[in-house]
Each structure stands twice: as structure tokens, then as C-alpha cells.
Amino acid sequence: MKAATFILALLFSVSAFAQKHTPMPHGTVYGATPDNTAMVAASNLEAYMDKKTRISTTIRGRVIKVTKPKGGWFEIDAGKGKVIAAHFSNYNITLPEDIKGKYVIAEGIAAKQFISDDMQHLAGDTVTGKKSHSTKTSKNQQLTFEVKGLLVEK
Image (cartoon, rainbow, N blue to C red; front, side, top):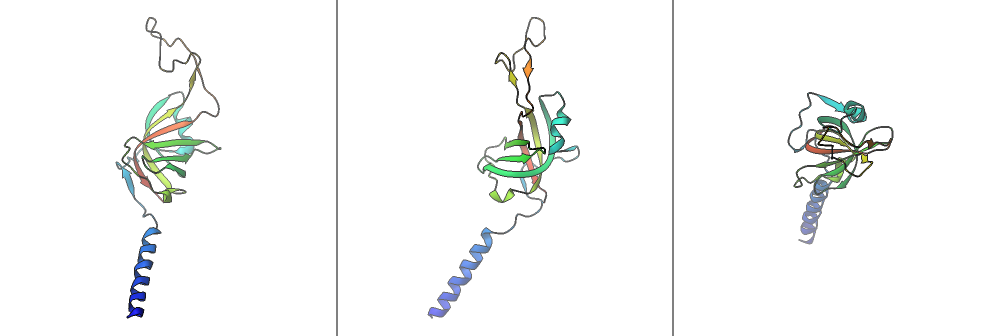
């Protein structure tokens, strides 16, 4: 009787262990399914944006790390030592830590962070209709990406 109980306990523990370490299937979607018709490589995103500060686009890149699983905060490799800080617009998304190192397709809004010389980032001169301040952009400015949908590619 003890042997049968021991064997059953062993079988249940092995199946529980196997469930924790199952690989993430190809094609897992978090949030909305991204539209990949006009996809841009994450390493080309900054050049694709040119002088625009915000654009809606779909990018493909490799996840460097998941910074906060709840809310879907993660980082994407932008090439040449740059990083794209990404997070979901819907806070109810929970990303697994296993997504690290995977290639993903993400649809959302990309934005450049910049510093205004007079701390008025979005202000403009309403009299002339022109911006009354200049923006200082640095070479190591960070790109942010607000994700609506993410597809795990491979």
C-alpha cells in the first residue's frame, strides 16, 4: 500500500513540475491581435519615425527582459545598444517571464522622449501658431512604446 501511494505521489509531482516548464507556444497573443501588414523592425523604428515624436505602428523585435509582469512592462532590443521601453495600454495584461529572448510583433504607439528648453513640452505660441521653444534631443534618448497587442513569434 505504501508503494502504491509513493508511486501516485511521484506521478502527480512529475506532472505538476512538467506544467511549470512547458515552452510558450508559437502564436500566443496578448491583448489585441496585431496587424502586421506594415511592420517595421525595432532597430529601424527611430529612423522610420524621422522627426515625428509619436506614430502608430507595428514593430518586430526581441524582448530583452520583462521588467514588471503585471501590466505588461518589458524592454525590446532596438539595436546599437538602444532599448525600447514598452508597456501595455491595458493594465490587465500579465506577461510571463518566459517571453525573455523571444521575438515578438507588437502594435501600438511609439513615442520619442525629449527635453524642452523651457520645460513646456507640449506648449506652443497661440498668437503666431508656431512653437515658441526649441526641443533638445539627445543621442541617447529613449523610445517608448505603448502596446495594444502582442504576438509571440518565435
